[in-house]
Image (cartoon, rainbow, N blue to C red; front, top):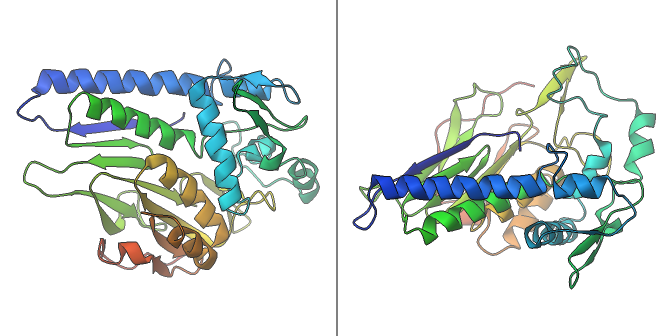
Amino acid sequence: MGTSVTFIAYTNPNLDEAKIRQAIDASLAEIRRLEALMSSWRPDSEVSRLNASPGQFVSVSPETFEVIDKALWAGQISSGTFDVTFQTLAGLWKFGDAQEAKPKPPTREQVNRLRRNVDYRQIEVQKAERRVIIGPHQRIGLGGIAKGYIVDAAAKVMLAAGVRDFLLRAGGDLYGAGHKPGGERWVAGIQDPRGSHDDYFATLELQDHAFSTAGDYARYYIHEGKRYHHIIDPRTGYPAEACRSVTIWAETALLADVIDDSVFILGPERGLELVESLDGVGAVIVDAHNKVWVSQRLRDKVAMRHEPTAGD
């Protein structure tokens, strides 16, 4: 789904290196299986099949149905800021398009013409038959939730194989199980939004928890002095402007993946209200003015290394 995957795993008295590698291979096979179902990058996926049949019910696998059902729940709890029908706007914004040497934002007329069809509430599901229908002029994309779901599934394969201590990363989605051999917890770095790629302004401990970051620095371009990035507010059709980065700590990668985008769009105040309303969820937010906000559950888990770098 357009990202790389990294495993770090330790042996234990029951599993030697060969068995650990077997578990990693099985986990990667599960990642590829689920990607084939849910990636909009693949023309033969179930998501692509849904997008090719708007206005018609399409039968999908249990896994794809579960992710879409969770996506509708996420839309409800986030006041519509998490909306998988954002894919309806695909093609307007040229983030990461190698064909666009000097990309520029679409016109307001272009955005408004497509934005009226961005509404997750137009999606209908039939649970018994595992069928899904999207609106006649809609497209869906599961990139904001499927990667978290897939990380959770891959972690389950590792745990089922008896691997106790591992870190699994797929792009900005991480899951840390157990701890390092000396008993130390896994530590994830929170990237400085205006710093270099390997500059972390803070770190966060992980033990049997997931971590996901949404930032305006991952896929973006500058046009006439203004930054345009890939996290689109479905209510406006334009990139959200309240935050620079949002890191979510949660018990599952799916939940972390969903909530980071929602909080990014809602902004620090309403975003923290959402975070605090969910059991076992925490957040570190860098807002549009470079102020750092830390939720209650993470006050004793985040270590600040330096203030985020200033700049536009």
